[in-house]
Length: 356
Image (cartoon, rainbow, N blue to C red):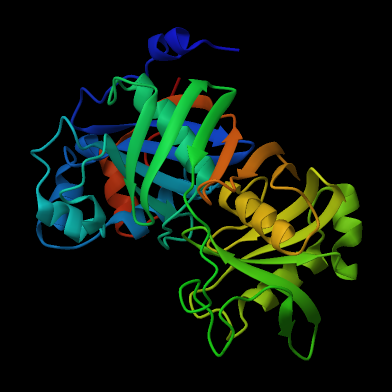
């Protein structure tokens, strides 16, 4: 276990060569990310030129970098930036990258999160834990209590050490029009019907800045929950659930079973990257749904294939607090030629990605 002082000493290198992009590969319970600095990315001419033209290279770049065969491999790309110390980043750059939410905010840092398929997401709890640890090690922040500007609003991260990082994920959204859900006249969707010709489930829908449908005790999921991993049939069923017209912006699908008043087992099929070892916003949604359905207390641990997350839905302020670890896997750099190929959709690379 690392102390905070040790965490601060374990700094990742900055990009000193404009012909390459420094990155850090991190994970939270196996939910993995490639972390890069926006300032470093803007030092890559091809990237910067497109942004100056009002274009967003991140979807194509993310697909290439996150490809597990031809890239580094990850569930998503996280672009972090200081808001306190880097005022030279122009508002037009944030607008081009879809990060208008960072303009004028009084936060320590901001981020842009992109799923491995190139789609954007407003929230990723595992990613936020990694971001907090990364920002400390990059010395983008001076305190272990960090305010982050995200598309889902301001989030607070508290880094005790790499084994204990807590994110205040804010209040769950239960209004059906804000989750959003289509065609539902209910104010909230608690144990409502999700059905098609292939299935019929009782489910609870929650947004934690991204939409979730939480399904308890589905017979089709019980064997997978016992083995703590997705079967191929359950993956296929998850896709069919996601394709329902009820979910106009897609949805994260949680298959769950409450095993005690303070423990839930869950498998999560994420919007944008499929079956995942861990999804912190999903774990938060699971606890909220389980409380609403009367299955558990407000403080519980959620077992995921990658390990356990601790979730508390506080009654005092209605905020959901999530605690778990984050870990650096390796650091490295990608040369400019390969970045150009990723941006333009190419998968073949001429040179190796250098890792340490």
